Length: 150
Image (cartoon, rainbow, N blue to C red; front, top):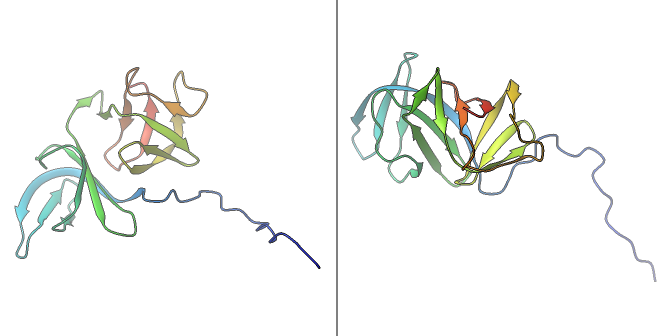
C-alpha cells in the first residue's frame, strides 16, 4: 500500500486573498450623489468620473454618502460593499478601526482591504496588528493607506 501527501504548490501567491474581504475597486472624494432608476446611487467624484453603488451594496463603514467624503468601493466576489470617511486631518481621511497587515494591503476588521502606499509607515506597530484605540489610519483620496498614526 502506498500513501502520500499532495505536493505543495512551489509558487505561493505573494498576496493571498482573504475569504470574504472586499477588495478596493474604486475610490474618490464625493462631489454629488443621485438616485438612479432601479435603485442604488450614482456618485460623482472630484476626479471627474462617477461610480454606481448598486442596490443591495453592503454599507461596511459610514452611514450616508455625502459630498466631501471619501468613498471606497470593494468587491468580495459575492457583491459590492462600500465605506465612507468624512474626517479630514492634515490631508488624510482618518479611519479609526482595528486592522491587520496583509502583505501589500491592510485588512480592516469590517472587511475592507485597502492597498498600502509604497511608503506605508506602520508607526509604533511592529507585529502587524493595528488596534483602533491608539491612533487612526491615514487614507488618501485614492484609497491607499499612507500610515498608521494619523
